[in-house]
Length: 141
Image (cartoon, rainbow, N blue to C red; front, side, top):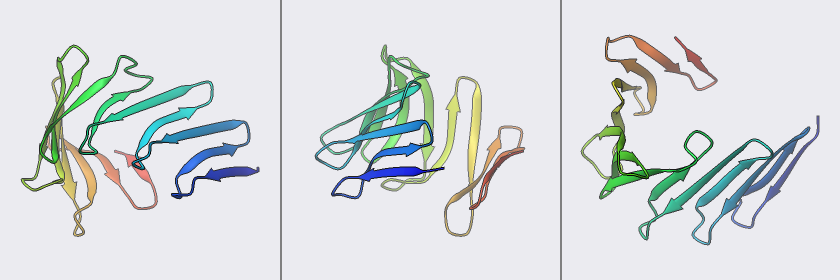
């Protein structure tokens, strides 16, 4: 199987072709990913504010878009375009802090960290490990 990669001067991937699958990425002048597209299937669009923070995501699941509400350097909420809350986020109290938990609808999930500070498990509200993240692969539990 042949793989074709096209890179920009900033070393950003622009196009990847694997077999009959073609993925295209668009970057802005500030070196931020603004669009990701899988030919004939999925398109994700991203918007940013003046501080370089991602503020809007439109994808195949929510084509009307989701908005990210920031508190300085941490995302607090995700809303739909009408302003209805879709998710609440709890981050450690630091600039760009690690995500501790998120709540979508009536479902909460909690992030557990390894010794390096990377998320290695997701736990549900019952205390059950819902997802274990490994360096080599991701497995559902």
